[in-house]
Amino acid sequence: MDEPEPTRWIGRSETRHDLIGATPPAALDHAPREWAPGTPLPPLWHWLYFLPLHRASELGADGHAKLGGFLPPLPLPRRMWAGSRFEFIEPLRIGDAVKRVSTIENVAAKQGRSGPLVFVTVRHEVFANDAAAPALREWHDIVYRAAKQAGEAEPTAQPAPADAQFARELTPDDVLLFRYSALTFNGHRIHYDRRYVTEVEGYPGLVVHGPLIATLLLDLLARERPDARLARFAFKALRPSFDGRRLRVSGQPQDDGGLRLWAQDDEGWLAMDARAELFSRA
Picture (cartoon, rainbow, N blue to C red):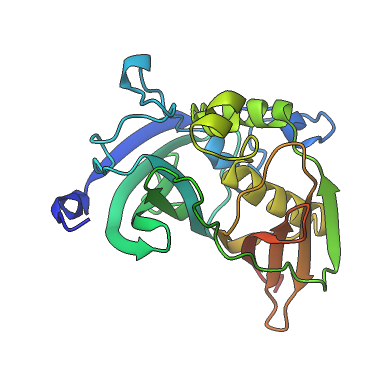
């Protein structure tokens, strides 16, 4: 990755518009409810809008859009969501007319244990109803990796914390992964094409979406503290999780007033680590 050309994408920007419509919450196993105009959108549900409406001819072999448009044309075939950071300034609400301005903030090449890596950071700002200031800021970290090689070492596993104050267990299945892919119009084949994910990318099963796990973490927080309002949130994906295997999402308040949230896989390894900060009630 000595070629500096991808850094020319830094500063590239695109703008998308959408309308916040009522989206069924049943994908996360909530009871049906009335999503009337003005109802606040749960945190991270903005991912169900501004959908990537690429033509079929614009997709690559993995189901993602081909590179070279908004994102830089990197010669690394595997693309994963590494993590995100958020500032929740004002709630988005059902019925809002919204605008998302996306800007590539950074492109950085690194050398990992398994080969070259490139991290691309995209800043998204979401504006509601022609407001001058954004209601939401997000920094999205994407990692690009070389094709998996036989015998390639997996990332070093970290044991999950054992001091959870609240937790929930579930087993993501192929139906949940399909429904989330459909809601987000995500064509990445690692989430629904078992033959592709096992034979081409070398995973043992369908990969649970990183954004879905992050959403499950905040869903856990909302179940535990239904009246709390989220101010900031950040997560880092550390280890892939797979369908048919138990996933445990947990939380623990911190001494500084924030909360640590995490997901662990069926072997007890840390799959995602996150931190949430709430607005004070004063």
